[in-house]
Image 1 (cartoon, rainbow, N blue to C red):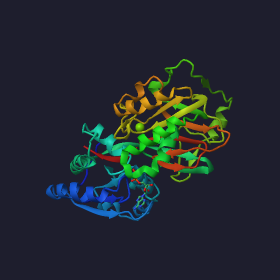
Image 2: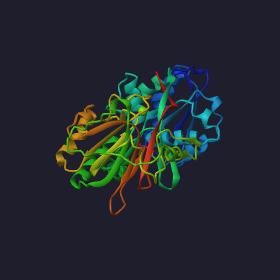
Image 3: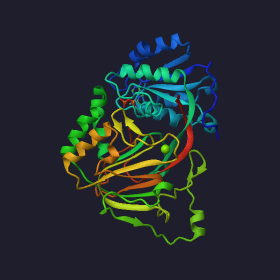
Image 4: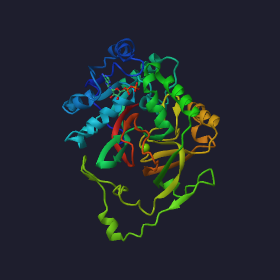
Length: 383
Ligand code: ADP
Ligand code: MG
């Protein structure tokens, strides 16, 4: 384990990854106009790499001598941040490499990472111009220290493991995120357009959501008394359960709470089976500048906030959710249910077996998945 706030060698350069194609394609301009002049002034050293294609940064990060750098800064949306964390953990020396602190300067259409860090640092995160946000963050990073951050380990069907720093989306949120990718050039407005289209064609998704509540949510009580919370009784013997430990074959460690996906969930988990219109689990407080999902979520709380809306919500109320999210009142919306969890399992029960599941904004195979928070597993740049 590392100290909560650790020493960093500020004489080393930052390693900067830039995605020229993220968001409305402003990353290069942002870097040379807003960031470089400030860092030159402050005597901050850096080495910059332009990514040439998707997964380029993930490949490069495997071979780089990380000892040489003070931290990694990505100038992009959340997609490149996701590549960095997954790249760091795919290294054979991941136990060591995961300690390098990571930061983001917002240049994408969704910038959940930098928005969350800015808010947690008490900095402004809502700007009319993305250029001003870049200036704020380049200053924050110039004087930053590494701090601990939770990562979420996700298991998909067919024993696929993925690391998520931000969120796991299903139903409407995932549909909006995926379908609006064609409007990436609009920056953050792409979600508004995507949401309008989805609200008009509001879809319901049948599914089963099971979760291990956080300590302060053991007596979880939904706002709507009609939510049917099922208790699990699997009648397994202690001996059997002991054998049912799930191993992450990528990182070679055993999970604390997850059992094999084929087995029933443990008895201390709760289950809700229903028709959902919206489902999203977040590890950070913000999913984007105007998407303040869980304002009190901390970087290192060892938990995710699971949020959902069940079918039956009036269309206009769904639109209200976006407005509430921009004002930090998402969880106060009467239709939003939320519960803090350490682990969860999602089983889509649609007949047609199709839909979208997004992890950190990247589309993954549609099917069952489960996730467990790895407390204070990686590090972020913050002040
Ligand atoms: P946005 O917020 O607009 O989605 P991201 O930075 O999240 O922007 O990047 C979107 C996608 O682009 C990610 O899947 C990422 O892996 C991919 N990507 C990264 N570098 C490049 C590149 N040079 N060309 C094309 N795609 C890239
Ligand atoms: Mg957390």
